Length: 155
Image 1 (cartoon, rainbow, N blue to C red):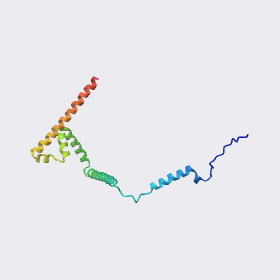
Image 2: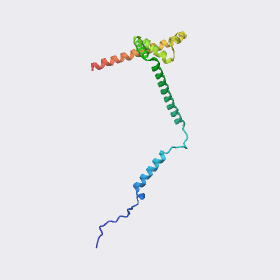
Image 3: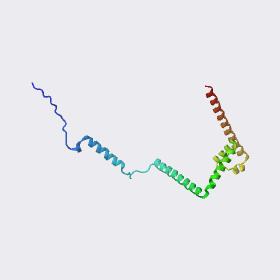
Image 4: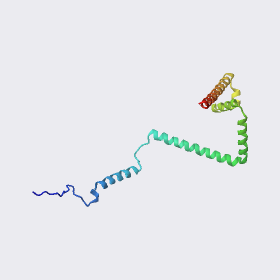
């Protein structure tokens, strides 16, 4: 009895590249990528995308306004801006922490010192109470940090 040891393939290899499975898969991926790259003209904007575009437009507009303001102030003031900035810094640093907090709080509220003085006494007292509370919070934070440093040195 003779045994045939040669194995014959059931799948015939073809010479056509368009029938190759790897080429077919690559072609499908390429055509899908081409379709995704084409502009989508039939889609309507969603509210989220409109809001995102509006937000981006607002940010760009704010940067443009800031740039124009900085260019205008730099060209008009020249070296006077440098001395006034230095003077402002020196004035700020010469103030007490309570005065700094008071100015910061008034600025956050959109008030000037004249506006504060024109307020009724009840509102002035409320703002003064806020300043006092902020000062106490800062003092408590400083004390806690100092105690922590002492505890770390002991360990």
